[in-house]
Image (cartoon, rainbow, N blue to C red; front, side):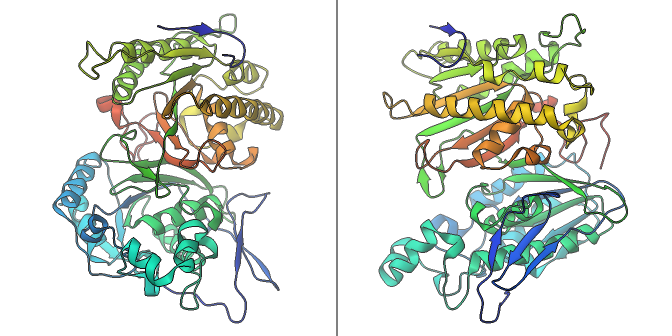
Length: 494
């Protein structure tokens, strides 16, 4: 049964002599600085200026033998890809087969090197091994199983699990060192003349690469998920000849398997999940009739999304009161409730559908001097083109929506709760920022495509820290998805 309610939700090692460094977010004239503080100094590290747009595609290696055993690998080089890992790498190769790359940087460790070789396939351009792309250095922990770590190191191992940025071993702070190393990698990558760059490395280093690119500190370790062979995409856009480029996370952790497949986040199974769905493409609208339905492509996108979500038992769907969002939410709900006749479930599913006014941001855009709807959100960083008042209003409204969604997710009547949220890409970008405890200035640092899916897990419940499982997942769109090395605008290649 579909129940529609209206307003609101009702019913390389780096050493620091004598001092231990602290890493903090930079808030914020330019969000793309990494601040490394000791007790006596503060330094700002802008990225090197670039002459043309550059897209960097990060891939984690496939499953390794030590992944399978649950053994801590760190920067050791004893494990190799399993048959499953080879298969994952082959799937990633197929995923990226239509993409054009100028160069591949890879970690020299066997598991990443082999993954890179499979993905790079018959391409003639050189692969460049980069030692700083190795996995996090974990010193005495490397090679241990989880139970061995607890037995041998006790409190130190628990610190690694619960407070990794402040974890110390053998006189080192591994996560802090990793952040410095990742930041150094960016100078090498951005100084290469290639405009489309593939980087094949590891879980922790890829997390650090994403975070340092966006100006996020070590507290974001284990918050930006990197699954085996997951693909993440960062866009670097030149500002001028002397300034650090604008940086936008175009995609996070697009995996060979479904983005909603059951797995763990931050080491724990998550029973609470927020699935953020951008409504499909909308028909061109007029000033007198701004609330248009989806066009044919948008309808296909919503159907593809509903088909993907059939593998997940959706508890409720919350949407913006705009036509495109309601139609997308209705399609998802109907397919969920048809799970039995579609052979996806053996018992009927009842989905509650609600409207949340705070998810509606199109009216805010209509007050702007900038035309937002036709094509603006198709290119990375589009939100930066709007007046400060517009982004402020969207951000404040998203904060109210975020609180309502967390309240909805906190319903304890069901142990497992999967909440689908449907709306415009702008409000979803702001919701991701709310989850990461950022400010409105970060909104231009994320990109979402029409029809995309982003997933937030809450392994410690809605009152705990959210883990971003994926951002801008589009693999379910099949032939209508855009190759990662192509811009969303006019099929422009990077």
